[in-house]
Image 1 (cartoon, rainbow, N blue to C red):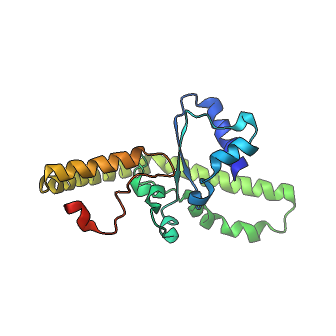
Image 2 (image 1 turned 90 degrees about the vertical axis):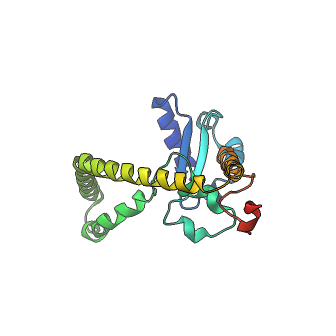
Image 3 (image 1 turned 180 degrees about the horizontal axis):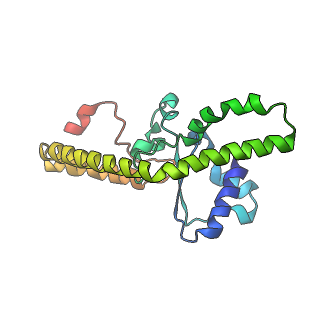
Amino acid sequence: MDYIFAIVLYAILIYAYSLSLVVISYDIACQWFVNIFRRMDEHWPAILRIPSSIKLIPAIPKLHEPMHGRKNHQQYSLNFIPGVGKSDMETPERVWAGHNGLGKSTKTQGPGGRHDVLDDHFGFWNWLKYIGMGKTLKSRYKAVLAERNRQVEGHRGLTSSLEEALVAKWETICVEWEKDEYPKTCENPYETDDIGEYLL
């Protein structure tokens, strides 16, 4: 995984000079990311090492994240990472369903013919996504705007019903947690043993 990640990021950096943030969506990001910088220093070629100017944020796709069920695991949840919106990062998993039949239908073909059929199939799949993108994005944009307005009003109503000092305290805890690097060490606002302690 390290090599694949390093090569992909290196290729992106060749064209994206101002890249400053990378969200890494991986089923076991909580395990893989732990020692990435140590492995990078010890084993990666110098040309593939990630510049310190780039902030890396590990995330677990939404379908996989609840299955981990470990304490303080919210730092890998897409629900709490600013800027990712409603992304679920499960697209690679979804693609398999449309391609499952290719295994049996191409297994008797020679390598060249099989590669051509797979390329044609994937190309057609991508073309269908491409031509449907405008309509899909337009309808999703309208839905997202309506949901955003609903959430803003809900937040405003809840906030106005609480004491200002309590709201300020909670906001400070959330902002500090969002700014903290991985692995996060400051207080986690999304996991509590006793909700009553915040009401004091």
